[in-house]
Amino acid sequence: MSAVCGGPARTLRVPGRHGYAAEFSPYLPGRLACATAQHYGIAGCGTLLILDPDESGLRLFRSFDWNDGLFDVTWSENNEHVLITCSGDGSLQLWDTAKAAGPLQVYKEHTQECVQGNYVVKW
Image (cartoon, rainbow, N blue to C red):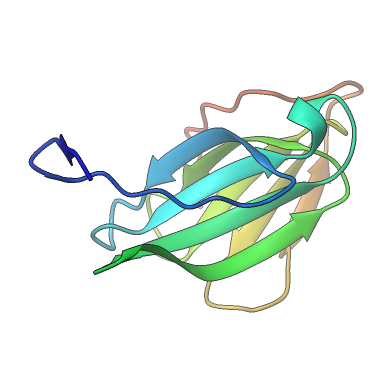
């Protein structure tokens, strides 16, 4: 492994998924959320991956499947377990990583795909 930003590079391969966005948790050191999609986001499902570093690389803490590609992810500024994703079906999904099932809520606010979210929301 090569050194990146003072530490080892870490990778995790997820067959059938391609990464679109990744964001580190502002609360839990090293915790990473990744928004993914099948078939390069053209068709298929998406998965939200919550990853934690360990001595061998990255380990999967939790994953959530969605019926369309996920293209962006943002952690809540007010809750260490809550984040939001946006997807190809035009919806936003509110997730709680402390719960195994999800999402908590779905906001169907767009008529076409939502590929980027810069959320300034006080959750």
